[in-house]
Amino acid sequence: MTQQAELSVGPLAYDDTGGDGTPVVLLHGLAQDGTVWRHVVDALGASVRCIVPTLPYGSHRIPLRPGARLSPRTMALLIGEFADTLKLGDDTVFVENDAGRLQQLAVERPERVGRMVVAGCEAFDNYPPGPAGKLLDVASRVPGGLALLAQVLSVRPLRRVPGTGYAVMSHRPVPYDLTDRWVEPLRKDPAARAVLRHYLRATVRSEMMEAADGLRAYDRPALVVWGRQDRMMPPAHGRRLAELLPQGRLVELDECGTLIPLDRPRALAAAIREFVGSTAPGA
Image (tube, rainbow, N blue to C red; front, side, top):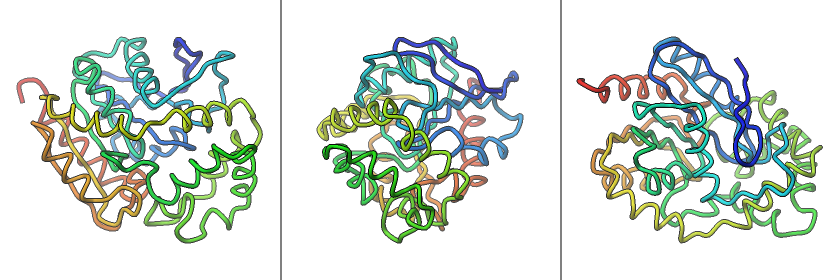
């Protein structure tokens, strides 16, 4: 069921399956929305309570308040604010794919992140990540660049040119109904493009290195899931994250790129379900 949470920067849309299961917050990456998690939510079923926000990463449809500006750090804190607003407890499991804001939140507010799953994310010095990340970064620094990129991506075949854009993020072609949805706000809404532009320009590579170093003190359950065929997020980074997290575990998946929720949704759901069960209080 789609709802809205009123946050300091404005309203945030989210889907909530409800129920009495463990809350699992599923976080997506740039130029996407919560629909990237649709198959994982289906696979998890009623075993947990899935909460899927659509973060203001350019593909959001509900405008933020005028003048609202977000950087990677403030986006990380916004995720914590979202969980606070929903009054989620410390049993909550946060799962992130593609972006790296959960790592920053876990360092800045470890008490807010009771358990976390890092699933193919930006880490260490990997920014901008891969060809898709570099393309977004360049477009954000050229006047009219994001608008032009959105127009180019409105042509379906161009989204599947090997080694570029969404094509490099997934081992399998990303369904057109999803990319149609993700590109539309960037193509039609200047305010959505402005939010993404400011976010990209405010990114500082050293912040990710600092977050990685800070994770050494995150002594709570953590799971790292990575695709062995990931061309954006080096698989070696997944192994490094699992090693530096005091309670880190690692799951590697074959036939899988960055967009694990699309490439291997059932395997990711199974890993999340096992993690939730094995790290529950009294388990």
